[in-house]
Image (cartoon, rainbow, N blue to C red; front, side, top):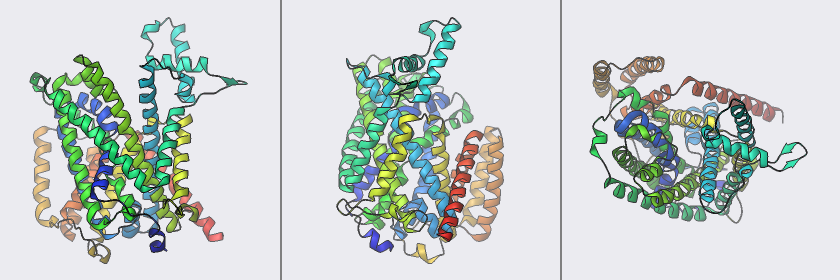
Length: 531
């Protein structure tokens, strides 16, 4: 069944196309927004967090690459979990990836709308406030505005966002007592991207390649031009808040790397997936790391690190030195960057659903392939609805951290899968294999180095770090006894560590999300049993 269906997809992606898609997915909101908050917390030393996170992602990328080489099917971590651990774990990962892709894209669509309307409003064209904000934000903003005015707050002291929401509420057209308020640009960009993904992988490839060329050109220009205005005195206090300050940005920095794994969902549309997918993931990760480190150094060199806690740090630093035109160009680049992220994730989600449908975990309709465009048409339309409708009416920015914890969980499962299946016949087929280093000989030394670092730097043993140390000891004993491969083990451990750095609210939301997913799985299996 799988072979018959997969043959209907159009294989047109080469190494350059896959690498471009990886870069398109990674370089988005992270480099244009969240990098500022991370730099404000960690100072110039945030570059070490980017490098550490890249290494952690690199371990995971190697494991993804081995699975992609052995099992060149669409589905990404879902497919790999199915091969390694069976159906229940595969369903959990599929549900987890829904959170990573769809909820992440809802947040990106809303951010895209904010940038788009901001650029329009900076010209003579005024976009109606009530058609560029969600209903809940407008309602809350209206109430907050009235409360502030009743307390005698000056208009100049009320945040611009609250004033914007107030104007949206009072000017919105009504039907009876209901106000027509919706984020139309967020819906519009989602429809446009869904259409591109629907009509074919070739069109998606061309759009991705064009956007990647544009935004890399802009980033290289920012690095080269910004380097002229670096004041090295801004680097004197390199780690102002110590290790803990650097690690405060872990969620933001990891969010900046999310996406390189998305290209593994296109395995059945690659010309040579077993050769090109592993290379493309590693190339994309390497290129993005170099760009991130360079941008972080330029930003913290141009202005004092503590001023970078803004939503648009790249535009901000150029405004500070009087180059407003460059700041405007960066705003356009951010729009292009977020569009490319939307494209790659809207491309990936339908293919995961297609794989789940083939395995009987979703209705068969999700696996249907369009006879002309050779794309998973029904799943693509559903993906557009799942992202577009919530982005139109809801404010989901509070759950964006779920994307990070969901991705880390998927990475950890894939790394564990390589450890579990390393001696299995499935991975023997892989043309790309993660180099084997026996943990029995290397891990004790690494543990001594880690212990020395913790002792020398006097790192606070937080609750999350204590849990990680307990898991580290347990897994290390198992690894030494069973002679596990070192690189997948390091991937598993680094992902677990990054997960423990996220706050408790993220864990609570993640746990609820997984429980909901397991309930749906149980209900669907019961329905199939009695169908």
